[in-house]
Length: 353
Image 1 (cartoon, rainbow, N blue to C red):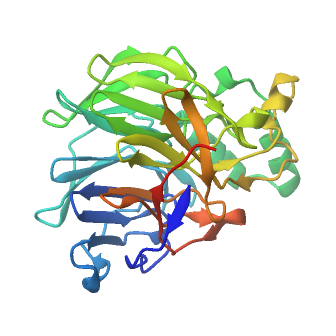
Image 2: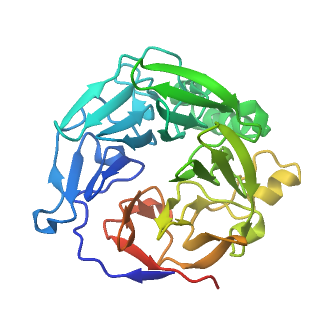
């Protein structure tokens, strides 16, 4: 995978674990580490740079699910700081950004939701679909309890919390449809495979690919799940070949992903080398003592499956992916040890090694 130089301007501030959307040549990004800031870029008028748009009107979420549908960008859930308790908690809100009016609307949504770390994609019938997501009760309770413990007790509690099997985290296995007209959320099918958080997402016509992602904290899925969005069903689990991450049995979380000349591609993401082997050997706290790494590997889906296609200039994750005629634009996110990245990278050529 080659990196082409791009003259597109960098984001004015770091956007890590934020939200993004795209409508043709108009790109939108913000939230996450950028707080309430929200920016837009018209790639046909790059001289104007990223323009500040209507700020997010509430506590800005991190790791929210987001999807563009026509002229609106929907931002679902995520984690926010509770001003009363001073602890992180899951947001239960769904927001819609109107690109034409430059205004945010809070949807009249009052149902139980677990959207943190989930992915959202367009539903050809009624709006959008949601897959995966962290159990809200467990997440909120963990944050509250951690805030009240001593350093020694925190470590003991964290260790006990992590040393559980995948099923003990109760992540969302339901494939959920959010009807944007009625603001109702319904489980319309069950994902027979393990639910994930922090998966990459690629959508192409009636297919969607959930790229790797965590199946419990610190442990990633070593595969890609293919969904039929028209019938709301899981079609297959697709293996990923080659590379030092997937080749060792691990997977990635929060990669970049998109279509390059109609070819599905994903790149980067974070992982813990050896976590999969530890879990298989019976060590339930699979990433204990392991160093978190940022992957630099790129994979494309060919007729023979997902194949290693090259490397990024450096490991990178937690950013925004935009599909342009010239290639896939990677912007925002961070690099090794969580160092924010402002530089744009354009993936514009591919070749399977």
